[in-house]
Amino acid sequence: MKTIIVADDLTGANDTSAVLAKNGMRVATLDNPNDSLSYKNFDALAFHTESRGMESENAYNIVNEITKDLFNINIKVDFFSKRIDSTLRGNVGSEIDGILDALPSNTVAMVCPAFPGSNKIVIGDYMLVNGIPLENTDVRNDPTSPVTTSRVATVIAQQSKRQIGIVSMETILQGKEAIVSNIEGLVENGAQIIVFDSCTDEDINNVAQAIIKSNVPFITVDPGAFTNAVVMAMTPVDAVKTKQKALFVIGTASGIVVDQLTDLKAAHNPYIVKINSEELLYPGRAEIECQRVVTEILSNLNNNQLFVIATMVEAKDKLDLKLAAKNAEISVYEASKRICKYVSKMGYQIMVQSKNQIGGVYTSGGDITQEFLAQSKTKGVEIKDEIIPLTVYGRVIGGLLNHKPIVTKGGLIGDKKTLTLCADYLITKISNSFYEEGEH
Image (cartoon, rainbow, N blue to C red):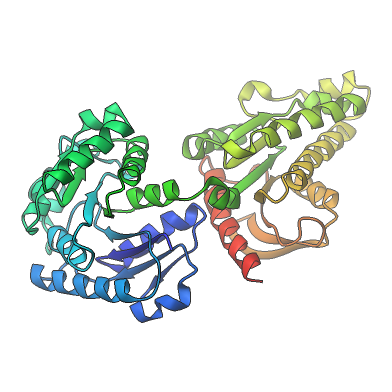
């Protein structure tokens, strides 16, 4: 097992679990430590103490007790994670001490509370929320856990008995080797809690890789992003990343597709191959174009998680179908059918030739979906859920893609966020599918 997460509330336990699950991990949130052995083959287990609003001493005791229980259960764990609130509310220092006092005495708390995805960064030991010092936000007036300072080390020191060290942004920017050296120096000088500046996901990834390289026994202390980075850094690429790959087959040519792809690029940075639609109107040239697209995707499988093949990526890509059909001496209807046929063929060939590395597929447009399923020789789709109206999730029935997760959407359905929503949904379902298949 990679990690056991001890969170101060149920929402926090679920949040960190969700981040790990999204990245292909098998995770569960449990109420009772005694149930852990039943889930020892999971990548992570999360537990919640509901201790955020408690008195400091009570919070220490409950975290200390649950950590002792979990440590003494016969499960090999790479590291423990102390999940804290993203705005440092609660008994941060007491709970760090509680978990450390239950673990071997040489264990160091690595604290990286930045959450760039939620616009929370730490620089100069100061937490900024949307660019505003933490103490000047609404958390100052929290009725049960007010935070009156922006300094992370000060928040911890108000309750912890341990020596605290800080790794500054200056060191972070120098790279992993500098971070490792700083960690080792701080530990040699007695630090048992180390707080890291971080402004970007790259910073967090570098810190994660550095603490692993330092060989210092550690726990992570964070709202989720840092723990996820450590788990991913510990996990071989082939063991996780291949579980979550997804292919998006988009044959719709419209402005909304361009907007949706733009949002998807910002959210997931997919590998995109634009299809030359006009080439598909000529059978010989169509086969060459198919091979080009399929080969390009397959050649980049190891370096990416999401893949898109699309006839229109930017507004300038839109094909004048009437003119193109005239030039090819075929009807507009036949031109549309040929494009649909070959785009679907590309999608199917990529899925099959990826040798199960691509775990699920998204198809846009009813004609594309129908042709894709026909190419796949399926019996149909078992419908499981509706993501939004006219956008459904299901599992392929029959053929070489049997049981594969599939999301299908009407080509003109949704707003600019819809494709990203579908991607998030599909990634999670692909992860679940991997484990279900493994169990069977």
